Length: 414
Ligand SMILES: Cc1cc2nc3c(=O)[nH]c(=O)nc-3n(C[C@H](O)[C@H](O)[C@H](O)COP(=O)(O)OP(=O)(O)OC[C@H]3O[C@@H](n4cnc5c(N)ncnc54)[C@H](O)[C@@H]3O)c2cc1C
Image (cartoon, rainbow, N blue to C red; front, top):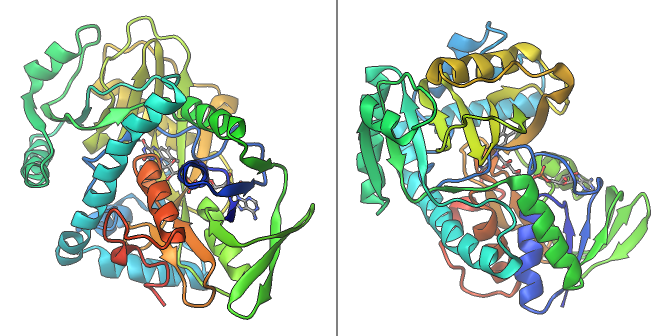
């Protein structure tokens, strides 16, 4: 009844939450101290509305169009790297309507499962992370984009989601304090949002209270194997014997998998954000600025703007012009918003773990019977966190899973 989890991001903590509830003795091994990282500075959306995977028709053309712009929202740094080439090939192969049609129901399943579970989690660990259940706006400036969003809203309704199609005046009526300049929007009413950093702190405190063992500032460097099992995790602070093991290492999933001799296709997708601590006249609704390709989230007087998808390897280099692109978009969509461009040292960045088809890796592998992979959630780690944690606990308990996980097989690109 012992589980060792590698990685203390949202996926690691949610997995610990459900495993601990089932009576497992859980240890989390984390290189940092769980105060920052991709699970902290993101936009905080829990969005069933995002059932279309990142790899979708038009994305490649858009990427190529933006390739040469330093402030663009989507960028792949060209470099001769075999893993990147393989990843790019599979991303291209999956960016078509037929694959999206096949994969969207799977994304929808895990998104809706997670959305239901977050209510219970909030009730149990306490409402300390500014969760609001008012939905999320998909804001469009161009009529063509709006028509596309209305079309997506039809698909969303087929999945049972509640939507409202809004013209410009209706959007302005929602945003009573700030002038907006859009053609219209779709309000996805099932989406909710919260402060992800506060949620991580609340969850970690809750797990600590329940006796989950946190091995912080501890980096996994290898594994000991015994026939078809991993028998111990080797770290820079000693060896940890293990019974069951969950790999939830975010963008470092392929690095950790390689230590076991497993090859996983995944690229880090860098995103930026900045948080304004006090905006006097703030927006009320979180919104994806669809044709601006960025996002904006209010928490009372706080406001976060963020976005970009920069595939440039594992690094935390800040390209200020990308943040400029996000800031400029926010100002265009909300001319009435009084915010300044942030100082460079206040620009946050994080690495999303991006798979080639936009579906996560959740499940076991044939090589080691006591290993579960949980990662590769790309832009949806917060949205799919609770569902993933529950699925991980069901897989380890060898139970029937709450949703079909066949599409999330970690070795599907081998
Ligand atoms: C700008 C931006 C906005 C976003 N907005 C949203 C949003 O609104 N909604 C949403 O659903 N998602 C959003 N995301 C995506 C979401 O943040 C990620 O999908 C999620 O945080 C990934 O969680 P994770 O636990 O897999 O990885 P991480 O949070 O990266 O955690 C992995 C952990 O593993 C640890 N680790 C790695 N290697 C080792 C090792 N060898 N030894 C020990 N520890 C190790 C790392 O230190 C890290 O803490 C956004 C991302 C960005 C960048």
